[in-house]
Length: 417
RNA sequence: GCGGGUAUAGCUCAGUAGGUAGAGCGUCAGAUUGUGGUUCUGAAUGUCACGGGUUCGAUCCCCGUUACUCGCCCCA
Image (tube, rainbow, N blue to C red; front, top):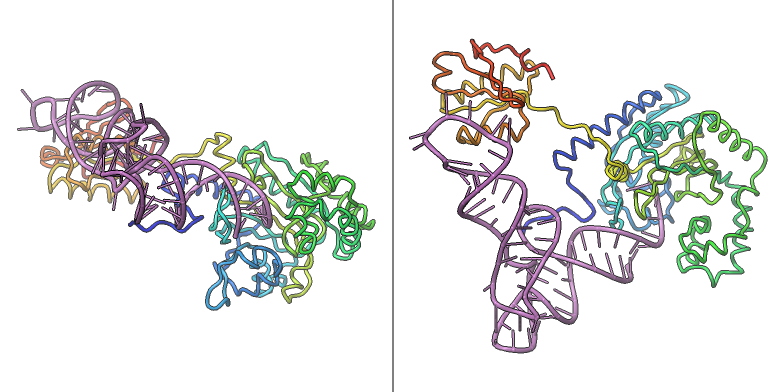
């Protein structure tokens, strides 16, 4: 019995891996344009970091983490807490009061896999730490939007909301739970459970009946004070000025404990049930929760697998691997050795070339060259070795060019295209 | 953790009203022996997911298991 990959993981075979890498590079260049710098953190952290950061009660921490060494360490299930940990541990605030960081990294959650959801998955995201200016909120949304736009993605909707301060939310939750308690028996089983654990999440329930009940529920926005509202309105008007197409959604909340005030989400219909492509928000209290000095911060994270799904569904024109410039067909021991010498010299001049290693017939080697999409083929045999001359054949039209001194072939021949 | 669907060649999938399997694509070889893409000819490859039951006989029917997949939950 062959050993199979673990549930919820996947292999990226060469074609897909190349596509993936080229999309990554595109994303990096946008981050760079926005003056965000890459940060890399360990694949695993102390489990305590996630308990404190994400919240002990969340599903992720309570039942989806890959922990080991008697629970001391955990494969990272998300990036914000590790980035903030690194920020605090390395005192990045001493280098510059505003840190603009991005990452592209793998993460791990032991969830039930489904479309767009894996156990080892990849996210790209950004964190801006150190400023409570609403301009940073706007820039963050602009950054996320620019990345998707640069990839030609048009059919995403931007939803934005504010969930206010902790104090404001407490007052609201009291009212909200008071309202819901009248309908508790009518709520879906999931929402009845959420009522105790995380009542805010009832707001984005998928149940129709829940949504019927929510129609007349108190609205969080109305419980926010003037400062909070103004901050939010300032972001919205700025986004309007910048021609960002968004919708406010007063029911948009976030799953993790560390979020405060601004929240946003980019959703796509091309994704199926897991339609959230990107999500983020402000988390002004996280640095303190992790035992560091106060620092207001905002960030977003986007699912890489889901992004690739959207691109594939939208017929995205993925770049292709560079063509093989030259394939050398060899026929005997001596020509094989000469071929290897020759391609070694050419490779040193950045010519992408290869030769046969399976002692195949000339015909099969030609087929192989064709399969590799080689631009030119050179056949090396006894005659060519003896005379140190031969012909390179251009595969697109079969034209052959006389090469007088094979051993010192001019690499410029292959540089065009 | 809960529910639905699926499991046959490397890939996409047929099929047998129960008699141990096929196609297309791909791979390999050949079409007078040193030249590809087209065409033609030929070949290899499957414990028909695994275990049990019914049966003279199961890839097909029944039960169980596992894997994959979609959805709930959760989240990006």
